[in-house]
Image (cartoon, rainbow, N blue to C red; front, side, top):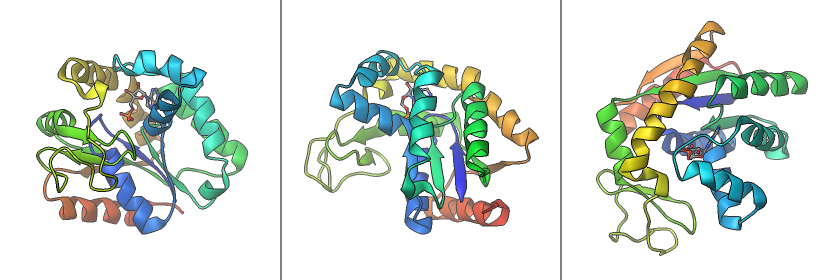
Length: 218
Ligand code: AMP
């Protein structure tokens, strides 16, 4: 299955992708995670990307397109993948289409995660991450066993620099301007499936999986 998860920052793309990885055994491909890894490693690409990321702006299309093109051709992605945070602009979506065409494959479905702005803000401001292993928590809804400490590796949790209130509004505005047009882009192709992701976690998961199983082309 080749899935795109579409939704605002904080909609839960990373969390739901991880559930899909468990269920379908296909990799989650997150451009945000790839870029953060490049920043941490201090590569040239990482240094360039960091300037955009810390302001909550999008990294140039050419950079992320190159990353994705390489990543989806790796051997673990031959049975499928979950794209989390890519595409984020129409040119990225068009380039993805060309790459997939060149590989002789098509997308199965595009799931649009629907949540209220109030919930987005709560998720973003409450999100804490482990700088060591990347595990994600939330101070309201997904607390670690010991406050401020990663359950998996014991490191102290931090707030992502772009989850600070002053950057969040910018990210949501950029989403509306650059990423929201993808809803119509994929709707026209008959690939878009909207899923209401408010409510109990297990119920949301059920709705997501049922949407996937009903609509996904393998
Ligand atoms: P995320 O973890 O998906 O919220 O991404 C964090 C940041 O990485 C974003 O605010 C952007 O600065 C950058 N980023 C991630 N994915 C993309 C993308 N597809 N296009 C441009 N910038 C991206």
